[in-house]
Image (cartoon, rainbow, N blue to C red; front, side, top):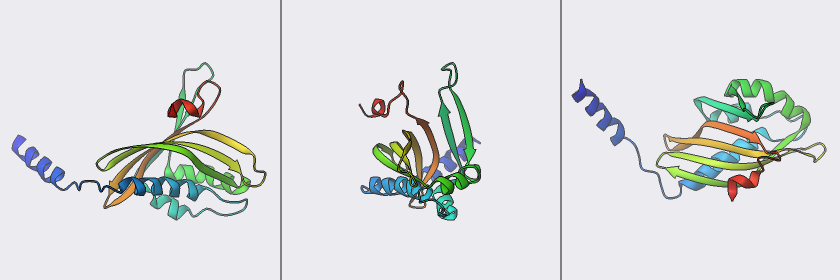
Length: 165
């Protein structure tokens, strides 16, 4: 049995393709496409099929909150749950989310992107959200796919600058 598992491991790991030198540009493009896919003016339907194509099949969204007593809490959503819950709201208010700065850490076919964001209502121009997204991406069949996004809005205790000092 151990011999079988060793052979399987060698075959699996031998098939892993080393990351190309220019991959960070593709990583940035995947993150930018994620922001662009949820952004748009009031009344504009989002292209949810294009959005779904950015993610691994079992990708997860995690929203972190400080909690009433500072103990922290989280809500997790699938891609479909995010589309169902957020889609109508994004279209209704006209939401534009943009990256304000980021830091990328890559290890072969895995990447973590810490991405500060600003969310603006396109109908009023009002900034309605700032915070930090953490993207986990994996290179699959030569394409960077999002495996998860976790985010937390900035507040007095946790300003965005803490992540980029």
